[in-house]
Image (cartoon, rainbow, N blue to C red; front, side):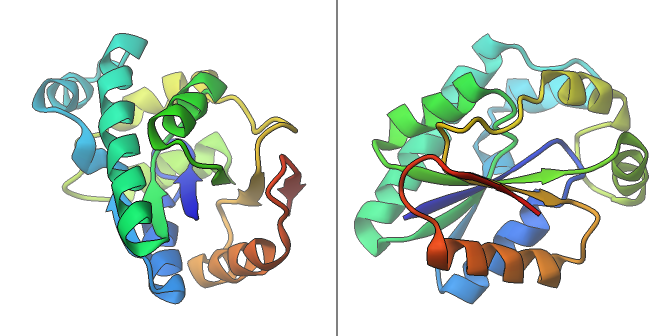
Length: 175
């Protein structure tokens, strides 16, 4: 099984992903670490990525997810996966039925989170483009949408409860 914690910058993907991986005894893959240097430089300069920038990144992350599941059976990854086509690309790269956890928050809350964090290349100026790009999970995808404003431990408990009962077909839950 592979769980992808997704959402825009500042939604808490990495925090929840690491917590969830620890609770499941799984490896955690930070999607940001699969960006190439040119993409990081582009984002750092305030330019949003385009699809040509994203495809190789998604392929690299997808290959890593696939390899980890083949070795250990389980992985949790953080990845923005903002569009359905990006999530489909991950599915194709992994050849797995992925489970998506979308962290959804208000622009104001997300801006505050981004402003408070240090050492990250993603400027708050790119948040608007990410929010405009975000496509909510569709009924064909296996996923859950959670309020990014909830405490990470509450989010983790919600995901664990959902994973215990989620079918492998595309059902969407919102909490």
